[in-house]
Image (cartoon, rainbow, N blue to C red; front, side):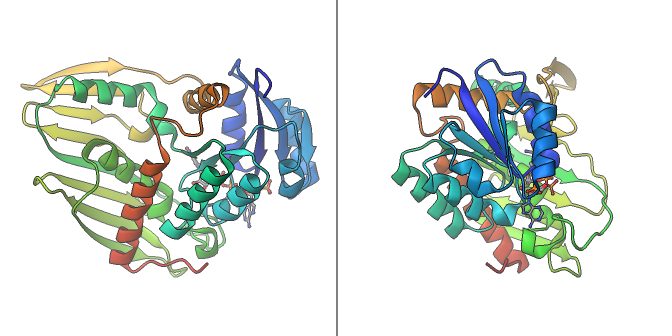
Length: 325
Ligand SMILES: NC(=O)c1ccc[n+]([C@@H]2O[C@H](COP(=O)([O-])OP(=O)(O)OC[C@H]3O[C@@H](n4cnc5c(N)ncnc54)[C@H](OP(=O)(O)O)[C@@H]3O)[C@@H](O)[C@H]2O)c1
């Protein structure tokens, strides 16, 4: 492998632009190639972000020997197919969240990555944000005592467009998979696996959830109250309540620049701005693993992604959401 990690990007939509913009900030990465179903789109994207090559198909990109790792930025329902294509060609993969649309897909993807002995990770950028490191630090210092509960929401109002990836069931639409994943990610990071899951949802006419409320119970009595919605703008904040205080991740908590520690009615505010658009932290974490020849990132191991999808599948089953594959 060369000293710089040579990245490829599959699917040149909204998030691919943000990711490519932050990739330019890295001194250990270069954008080797980008692939779209349209060569014009790939060429324009390559020009904007100084990619060395533009490909007119995903297949052509994965066959290129000069690409070390592929960032998959397609809609959820295509993550399985696109990841497997990369893994078959022994490419390392950073795949956008959620890794798949059900646990079976995620299990198969992880098994394939392990069999091919290549790096594989779910692109949960929040895990690498300075604000999230601060939360871990505060918890490790026992700053809020015993944790009692977590409350987190993620909601924005968006018009109903049946064909868009947010509402189209064939593309893995619905608030749970798209943004409900972040409150669940927080609860799993802090409290681990719940012992019981309850959930209630409202569905669109396309058969996906536009609102999902979740209540998780834990063996020792802890609780998590979580929500996702495309129907209204919600605070999109997260709180970890303890016996001695509260940690607050400010809006929008999945990309927070501010964390508060509230104790005895006094608030200590930590300003922790992320670099770039925020993706650079995850990019550098992946580059370090790639340069060290590691196949997983210890901060976001594949076991975590398995647990995350196990929880999501249980919520899906509670609300009666099933994707046809
Ligand atoms: N980490 C984050 O902060 C974050 C934020 C937003 C989204 N995401 C994740 O990123 C993924 C993509 O989201 P996005 O908002 O970038 O979506 P998007 O704007 O719709 O882009 C998705 C791209 O996938 C490709 N694609 C391939 N087959 C497609 C099909 N049948 N229908 C539509 N597009 C298809 C297209 O690229 P080509 O035409 O170039 O092939 C399209 O531009 C999602 O899984 C989402 O969860 C993550």
